[in-house]
Amino acid sequence: MTAPLKHSASVTVDVALGDRAYDIVIGRDVLQTLGARVAALRPGVRTAIVTDRTVAKHWLEPTEASLAAAGIPTSRIVVEEGEGSKSYAGLSQVSEALIAAKIERNDLVIALGGGVVGDLAGFAAAILRRGVDFVQVPTSLLAQVDSSVGGKTGINSPQGKNLIGAFHQPVLVIADTSVLDTLSPRQFRAGYAEVAKYGILGDEAFFGWLEANHADIVVGGAAREHAIATSCRAKAAIVSRDERETGERALLNLGHTFGHALEAATGFSDRLFHGEGVSVGMVLAAEFSAQLGMIPADDVARIARHLSAVGLPTRLQDIAGFTQEGLADADALLALMAQDKKVKRGKLTFILLEAVGRAVIANNVEPSLVRDFLQVKLARH
Ligand code: GLY
Image 1 (cartoon, rainbow, N blue to C red):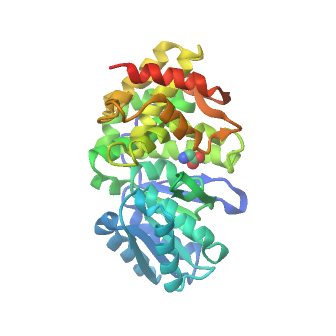
Image 2 (spheres, rainbow, N blue to C red):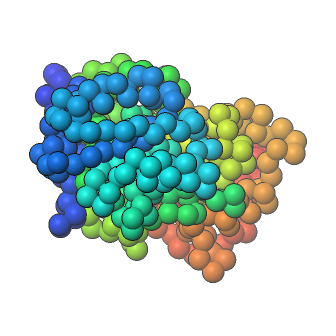
């Protein structure tokens, strides 16, 4: 696979879901086309833009301008930045504001932001008046390659992440790759973990291309659009075959069972961004697979080497303060995994690896094996 030399105007990836199919439009400055695309999709529509304070500072005005230029009335709903907004309180704020803005059945909610805003606004749209359509305008790398595509929406319960939610597909995704220029390097890297995930779980050639081109992706060269489009194509293909995660969609959870437990153990705080948890989680999944004799050690080392070259954490010891006494032990991590949605009748579901580019779903993993594995990992310095 070779890197594209020039930025293309835009790339459109189709999510083939029959009469609920939609386009993901990827490219520099495609945000400017939002109004025209929405007007073509829904003539006469009204919209409400849901965003957070930080994204609003950079991108609310251009978004409103694009919609206004197409003659589309808009209102704005601004929530606090961060995971705390993905809560019953955040849902109540957004739902009541949508009702106050008189968003009706045929109108559109526009989610302008990262994963938190997309999940929250999408869920509010799913339940408002028993279902209003929505558009995703993802502004983080993580949202562009993962959370804005595929229709998973929801909020967190005090008892666990994403436990309250609905499948609700967007009608359009606008992934403007130039908006990623305002992300902090750390946020960008965290999103990159989800890009690498597509290579690790199902596309060894893409992983090899990432090893050669990751620097150009970070600086915003043409490789960035290619990486995002390839990731979205991979996700769209899986979602169109298994929308409700009855089978292969679970592969997209590679690194997430360990990752969610690590996020929970660090209080969903800035100590560990979601993508960073996925990075550590993918390496743990690879190492656990090796312990079960499933994957060659060289492949495990290759995965860890690449994530580390990008600047992502790959070991429990990379998480600030994590292995100090009392902060985490194997039993606590196991208890957190048991709260995850990936548990069935006491057995854990893990996505394990047979090679770089070949992931498998393991439904019956004995918790004691995971505990023993984590105990060894936690003891290492
Ligand atoms: N983020 C995993 C999925 O959408 O299925």
